[in-house]
Length: 78
Image (cartoon, rainbow, N blue to C red; front, side, top):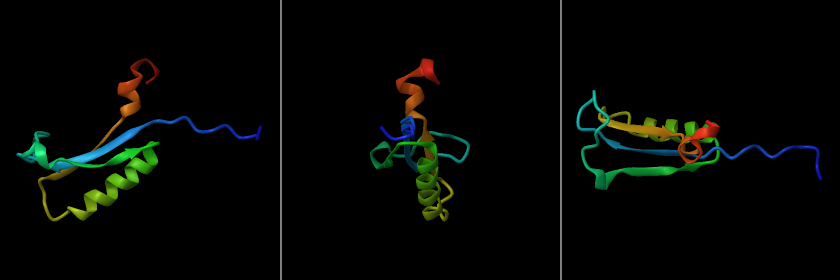
């Protein structure tokens, strides 16, 4: 056994799409939602979110979100 402990898996989902209004989180077309991916920790999810959000900077209504899946899967541990 090695001396290091494996980091706890904390799943995060990054997804997004075009919103109906800037002051809303309602999506214009659910069939066009984009799943960027599921990531093992917040740091990698944030990097993916930032990269994808920067690619759509010219469309003010495009928004990407990070969902803490680990909190939904195990709410008592959150």
